[in-house]
Image (cartoon, rainbow over all chains, first blue to last red; front, side, top):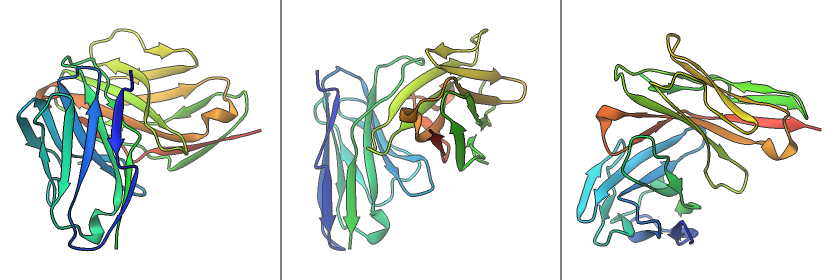
Length: 113
Length: 116
């Protein structure tokens, strides 16, 4: 049982390049999330999904797209990376149910030059 | 307005002493949940404790307890008998039932340093 895994762990991009971050969970969770964490700030929600084939915008969605084609996977895409997207990205998942905690992946450190 | 406020950027505590990390929240939703997470220097987010808005008693998990004062909208984390391994960032977070999808709003965190 690996929990929540993220690929890659670290990436350097040049401005304008694109990339996809992969999140996978093996806990059969319904809900999945993408957050970003910047220095001096807490985690901010980018996008989330309440089930396979559904996605919704969070607090800071601009510049990102997501897809949830399979229940266990949640992809975060950057179509044209900008230096402002330099951050640490966390994926999380949880079961349906208001008392359920979110389980986090180890994070992906992204540097955009 | 900030949904979660953590006013202590950094805290120091002597090993084996207790420490309280402050968290205040703002919501008009009568049904909500409060969470505390620990983030060590390795970067992962570790769930510590949960308190529901309708829970009558303060939550406890081992050395962690949550001092829930509903009228004051505060949910302070108390760590008893601090250990060196408790040195980390601590985040308070809130989930509102009306927001749906169990979305969490995080505070900016408190960095706790345990002194030997």
